Length: 471
Ligand code: SAH
Ligand code: SF4
Ligand code: F3S
Image (cartoon, rainbow, N blue to C red; front, side, top):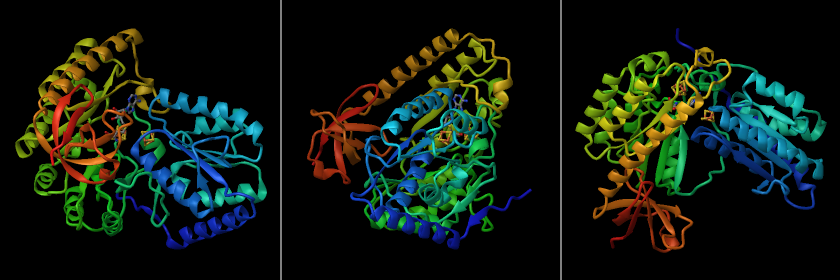
């Protein structure tokens, strides 16, 4: 059944901006500009959401700080993907009790994916009395209204109702970077991988209209952004809910046609929906960076079925082969879960052999973490944690060796790299990225940040490349 996406109307967003002006009028009465601290956990989607929260805060007259003692508003934009992520948030949130005791007028907000989990919202309601506002990703567009309510009526606000989700355009943004930008092209996920919480907290898949995405990219290109990442939990299913017959490859083609000197990246791609058309489009479009993040999660077919991933090992390997034929210098990265319930060490060894076959440039590795309400959390999980940890270490060691070998092969090459920031190391003060997004550290003046330069790679280790300006 086709599902209609709710689009938040421009009038609704105007009303939120009106709340911003009313809050700004309240703030103007203060002796100094009030400050806000937005603390972001989790993935790029959350980073992109935090840029909207900051956009609203700026409209409300707030400046920004990283110091919770200085902040009148503290926002924790949380992640629920693994237990460790949740514990970090709860630990930091607990510590804010003392900060708030020193600053009783402070407003403490919890939003993001954890806020959308019913048991977490309940725990905050009962045990974290210093938290004033809790709202899930679906209610982010109403943030100014919530702050207005808190400032004018006090009390606590909880806005965490479950819903399929909506799309709102026109929320102001304050971007964190002036070289790289995130552009969400879709929200939510329909895949229900059996271990994953995301579909429960982010709602159903919904695509932004291509004209809205293109307008945002045009503006970013005009402002001089050099690296634009299109975001979605599964960008390969972009467009399935749109009237217009348009898929992700078509969108990529249109973004590629936007004038300007910038690179296009995207994440994440689900292997079940990665098409030959997408690979051909990537190969053809000059601005699309030669890099693909294609999570495989496990190398064994039984485990992949239990994960509800809808592809098998042979299909995954065939995709990688086709991609490498079309784009020989493609940089491939992936996500892997170790210790999925019931995965035996023999099955895990197929994950290792897949690594050896594909030879990823880098890998994001995770130990399975049961998430409340997901099918995998109910599955028998007999392997002791110690064994999972040992398997995990074998995985990391193998990948480190592969990454080091792949990096070593760059030495002597000269590549067009984007100088994108500070490396924080006096010997190599600049950080740059190869076209395939590998980190290069080099010496040079800070004025180069934001420019593409030819860089000769002189050295490498497991985690990064080292280079020098070639001109
Ligand atoms: N939408 C993306 C991934 C989002 S979550 C995709 O489908 O590829 C990022 C990664 O976290 C996942 O790819 C997976 O490897 C890992 N992950 C998700 N749920 C997890 C869990 N319950 N335990 C351990 N790792 C998990
Ligand atoms: Fe989670 Fe799977 Fe959706 Fe990725 S595709 S967000 S792993 S359910
Ligand atoms: Fe975490 Fe939510 Fe992203 S659970 S990984 S912040 S979509």
